[in-house]
Length: 337
Image 1 (tube, rainbow, N blue to C red):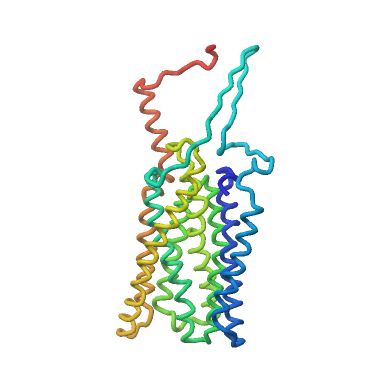
Image 2: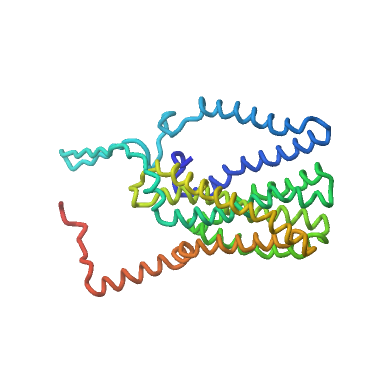
């Protein structure tokens, strides 16, 4: 995807693209509910998606081009492959050939600015997402049948689809200030998690459905944008000289680190549930834990948020001070070279 779209408008494009995974979640939840309700073997819930994914992966491997030049197209900003720049001055011509960039190493990609912070922050956000996605059917099963609980919990996935689109679109409107938008979404999420912690057992069904969809939007937006547009933005760092091959490595680091953090965090959920069960408060401690994860994940983006809010102003102030000290000398653009 990074080969096909430039940084302008990237948030909205990637937000739309990431909707596919949640469409799959919704279809799988409904299909699984039907299979279980009809009395078929539960293994079909695993076998059927596996077969469909395998067949579609084979189609993608054969038919989807890797970059625009594979189908005779070109980008305004050529970021992959060798490029040729020609300049002319009357009868003189200069040809500069830029060699194909080499792949970026794991350590080099990991040391890019903000990659580590985003990777760990995404782990906490992914933990919140996994806890909601996997635990909601279990929580709802105390009030509804298993098949009905599975279908109701799919509203969370329904909300995640517009979340990625809205988050990406808003970040584009604000000039790519994605960390600020992510922090806003997480700030709205925390009070909703507190409502679930305190009033989960008495929330009316209609309000429950609306809150699930809204929470899906708030969680899905940052999760989608970090693994897509943010990863692409990080791979555009000047320190790697526009080598777009870093995008795959950066995306892998963020996804992999996030999965490890989320997996370790999942181990705490049954322990917290048992504590809540002993205290006769149900899943309350689990919800509190998710609030803490949300706050910690957002705090890890603090440096990036500060840079997005004040970085340009600080840079302009520093430039003015330097110019007043005579640190820069103006150069006439009319001088012939």
